[in-house]
Length: 272
Image (cartoon, rainbow, N blue to C red; front, side, top):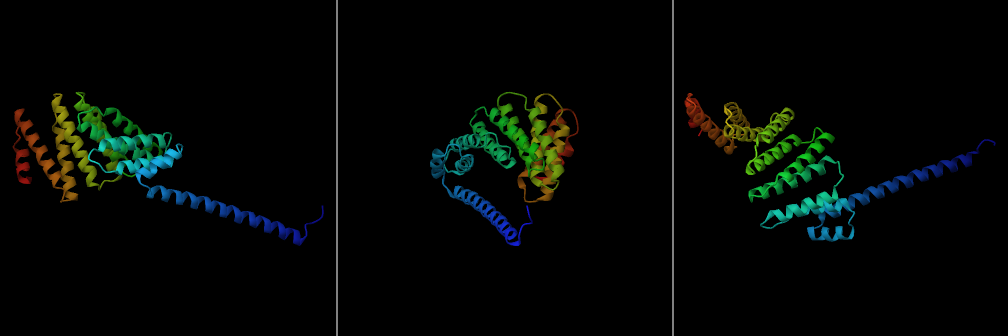
């Protein structure tokens, strides 16, 4: 074949440019449609989202927004709305590996577990489910914001459920402390992380005493965490009180074992 003439070459370039423009326009339309749909779902009430997902049972995003709406819904009893939210999360994100979605589902399960435990019901399976979700999220995104702190809270919730069921809470409490350690490695200035680790260490010391172990080192570490939390934020009066209580328990334990507990009492009185 002979060389392509200028007019024919121009025609090909024009067609190629037209195809590129059409593709770009199509992608823009798709992205705008997705964005508009997300915005539309965010504006819906729980009732509207229920109707939406009833018409579109396979719409995972709709179920996720319905789960969030259920979690925010009012009412004096939080358990039904947490149960509904968790069910929609399970259906809408069954095979999801997105860390944000997994952490949200874990948070809903945590809220439900806390509410059930406060009623004296066994919530250990829920806590374990939430732990599995958050561990999965951290495998996908190891630097997930506050991921280790949230996982520590879940282990703490499991430990409390174990204790309420007559089981040894120490393994779960030790796991909570380990997660708070990891969180403080990433965010050493977080007074909330120091507070949370102090709570876990304090409860681990209480459990050690219950099982005839020496809680001294655990309570001392808890007192240090509470002191660090208050140093970073002097308005945290609860942590000041927690430190005083830990020091009093430490003084009582030392005195009961024939040791000198006066220093712990002296510091506790000075800070009370």
